[in-house]
Length: 166
Length: 166
DNA sequence: CGTATATCAGTTTTACTGAGATGC
DNA sequence: CGCATCTCAGTATAACTGATATAC
Image (cartoon, rainbow over all chains, first blue to last red; front, side, top):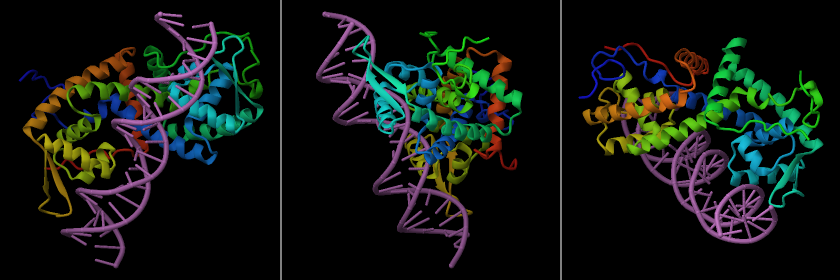
């Protein structure tokens, strides 16, 4: 009716498949689903979930931050972040105190226990990455990481470091 | 040379940040979340969801199949696939009939309406992929696709084409 | 005033589990 | 019998949407 080129069109001349396996969005979804499943399983052993890890790493990487900041940096919704911080502070992995400079905000800080916990999670996550990427050579892993990061940056999915440093 | 701001995680000799953005599993999750959000939004315009698309494409690529087969090929859980087929057959995009050779199975076939519908979805998905991958050059897109496919194959997340058939 | 932050109370999907019914 | 397929009922997250209270 419209196009008759063999790009993705009709039944007629298409050899076999190709379409299904050529859709990055679909591949992305499937691999991510698997990766998430794996991450949840392993982190559960340490009583953590992936958002816990994301928050702790963000705190280590960028230092204390407001919840709004953490939300931007991790990709967690603000409303959901509250619960994550609750859970982390119940276990004394982070501390949440009002920001003296701006009383609308809280300042979330990682505690020494949090740091210790995070180190344990690091090991779990490292082995997870290793398993996930095992079929790829080292430079291919790097390549994949770079490509994904480019996508992330372009779509502004997370906000990168504001170089504060007090 | 790094201006080592020790405030964030001095131990382990880890340079500032880097960790967060170097975790493929995390990047994967964030990009996939975005991609899924986009896909759902756009497909919703045509009254479809991504699993609908996956099933229809699979039928076009491989021909009629049982639900169990479709489940393997698309990554949809068997229990959930039932609902998807229900929705697709209510709209006459597919037909579900008992397999004469094995009465435990159904044979799911795409109808001409389904084919038409699928063509519309193809266009939506193409523009989606274009938007998603816009920051990447053509060969980079290819590279990304290949890497993801390798991961998929290695972890046996979907079953690839069975014998050519007829 | 309008805006931003944190919190709470929800809805809606979605991934996943388990068990039954039927047929091989 | 054991095993596979389809179906249904249900759980558990997860993503997402307000609305409110408070402070700038």
